[in-house]
Image (cartoon, rainbow, N blue to C red):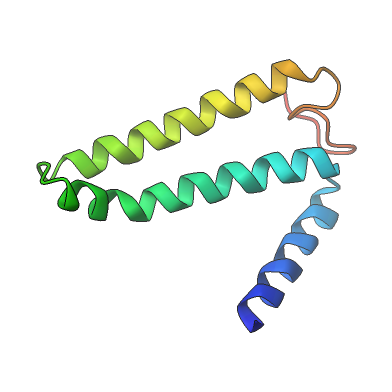
Length: 92
């Protein structure tokens, strides 16, 4: 339970410090969780499937690419509320 409280406090601090909207914070948090999971699970997945050692690097790269594509599509699908929707943080 202590780790959950710490995670909540860190998330709240980052959202407030960067002045992010709720929709943007949820998207970034989901993307981070997805990428982090596959970053650490890639070695186990490739080992379990009997793939070569370099396959974990391919899985990690595919997960990061999929995350980037998902964030890009999410940004285009909601004009005015996408990744550029932070109230004070403006991305080019």
